[in-house]
Length: 156
Image 1 (cartoon, rainbow, N blue to C red):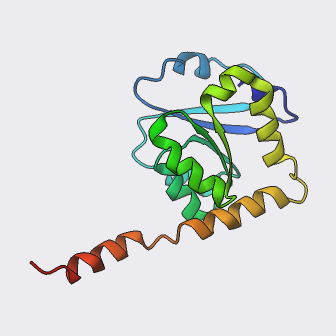
Image 2 (cartoon, rainbow, N blue to C red):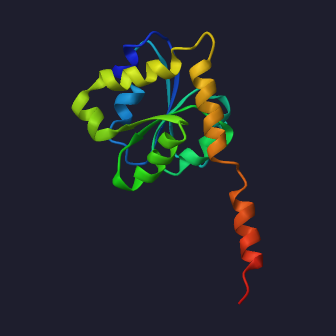
């Protein structure tokens, strides 16, 4: 939040936390320039994804849903098992990708710079539009259909 506070705003920020998030209370007590809503225990992110202009997330599997609907992304790889997701998004130029250990080392300015890059074109939306278009190219939303088709073609 400190990194986001440094940017021109204010922004409406929806934060989704898991059941063991260590800073939930601090997020709920936030009193900065932005409107912050903290969500916990969600069974789907679809309603939030329908209305968001930018998604900042770990580089987990939820990213594929965001790509399918064309949400501009800022990804932070927090675990080694997220490297393939981050590398795929980076290679497709579908998001701004960072590594958590680098962010810890380099500080809030690097993170704020990435967010600023994604929102800088607020008036014309060029950066977010480009990220959105490239994200949609990565995921067509027909994976389940292909899995079912492959299952029916499989012979025992």
